[in-house]
Amino acid sequence: MKKRLQEAARAQQELEKRMFHLKALYDVSREIGFLIDTQAIMKNLLMMVVGTFGVECGLILLVDVREKRIAAVTQRGFEDGTEATLSQAVEAGFPADLQAMLNLEVWIPFDVSEHLKGGIGLGEKLTGDPYTPDDSELLVTLANQAAIAIKNATAHEEVVRYAAELATSLRRIQILESMKANLAKFVPRAVQALIEESPEAPSLDKREADLSVLFADITGYTRLSAQMDLDRVNQLVEIYFGAFLDEILKLGGDVNETAGDGLMVIFRDQDPRRHATAAVLAALGIQRRTRETNATLEGYFEPIAMHVGVNSGIAAVGATKIEGVAGTRWTYTASGPTTNVAARLAALGEDGSVVISEETRQRLGGEFDADDMGFKSLKNIAQPVRAYRLTVEQREPAAARVFVGLPERRRHARRSVSWPVRVWIGEDSFDVHAVDASLHGICLAAPAKDLLKVGASYRLEILLDGDRPFPCTAEVRNLSDRGVGMETTEPLPLS
Amino acid sequence: MANDPEISTRQKGDVSVIDIKGDVTATTGQPIEDAYHSVTAAGTKKILMAFAADCYINSGGIAILIGILSASKKKGQAVRMTGLTAHFQKIFAMVGLTKYTQIHPSEDAALKDF
Image (tube, rainbow over all chains, first blue to last red; front, side, top):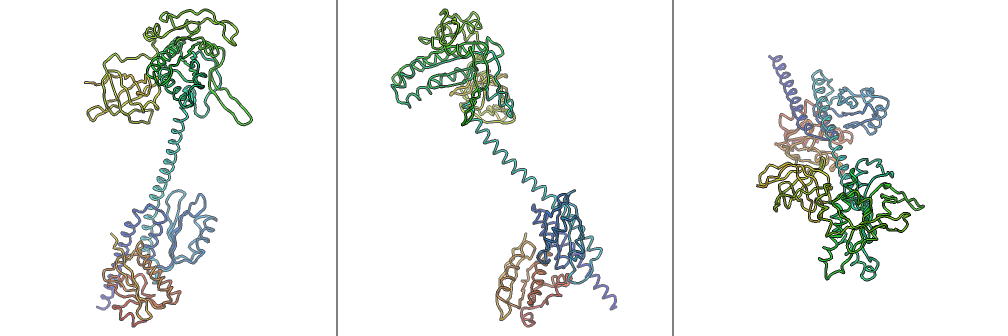
């Protein structure tokens, strides 16, 4: 009877021990399963193991075997200097004989990954009892749990690191985009296109190209400057040149230089007739806008007059490098006789006319009925040049009809709208409002003009009255302070 | 949900009593260690750890207590415990804690044992 009671007591004790181990396993799962910090996982696990087995000394070690260094370690009950001993042992090669080195009763290894390996080491039990096979089995289970938890934590740490790197990269991109947007105000579009095409090695070498060059300057600018204070002169230039820019950009011109009272604009196209026509139309547009602006500003400013000249032909287009002791300055321009002649022709203009060369006139076809001014001797030009005069009243409407470079398709009635529109530029997008629309046309609010280019096509998503966006493709026809005029490929649902 | 421990210390003659309520686990055990270091710094050689009836102690908590008993042994301090349920008394015996401390059924009995 006594023997049976003793057996029952032992059985009861064993059952309680197993229940305690089971509870420890449950607690470990609960406490480390949701941790995402490797060191915290190891520290918590070690506490649970030390308490479960009743030991004074224990450690969990994680080693980067590729780099032969301790990735993480946590220990309880060992003397100071143990970690230095461990480091030396790991540098000599892992797995080292840590069991003997640290007087461990048991060492359970685990693998987190190919290069991240670890182990749980425990000293003598407080009870003095040896470790049983059941103890080893429980330790292996705990070690496996540790490996999984550390693997998850490592993956999480990687994700956090990648997210931080991504955030830094995005910030850099935002700064670069901001710099790009600001620099774009000072850089000709031709240069922007070349840099975007090949950012690391833009092809800026000078190459011969067929083009048309427009020169425009304010008549009597020196006299005006002397009469007005600088702020008013600057204001005047901004008002007029702002209006000119609308005309130039909608016809695909690239403002190459501005110098006080003057503009140099380059027009390029595969078809030599198209860029000549565009340049002449822009020149006529400048004269028309001058007259309109003069009328608008009557009473505020004295009316101004513009000299405008256009020439077409071959020019050397590319970068000119000016190198001095103090630094280097690059300019991108079209140089050569074609440009020089255009500048000299501008000086011949009077009474709001546009002066063009023989070469330009020939490219325009019969629709432009220009007045022959005869051969003119131009300063620093060896041979006399035959010049022609065009005026806004006689020429612009007819010219606009024949110009097919950027046709305006607003044949349909437009109406005011207030549609939210998402504009896609490659993988990026921005949101803006449409202010008016016709069957094949849409005008986006002015903020969009800084992001879009004349002649380029973009994907739009227009949020009409319903929830579903209306997708379409549209090409930018003109940019101005009033907004961005676009022609849509698909008819817009205006009903 | 962990029941955060409430730890306080008081003096009974030359015995420093550390009162412990709530859960004693690896994550909540720091205040108990702090209390031990506090009374040790005051020079006490006799410590009574008085557990409240609702105390829950898991393996991590036992590790905390092992650490305290191990340190007290090196410092020549005597540590007694009281207030533990029969279940935890068995667990403490199982992991060998009772080799380093005596567990008493009441505070008075523990105080008399120093």
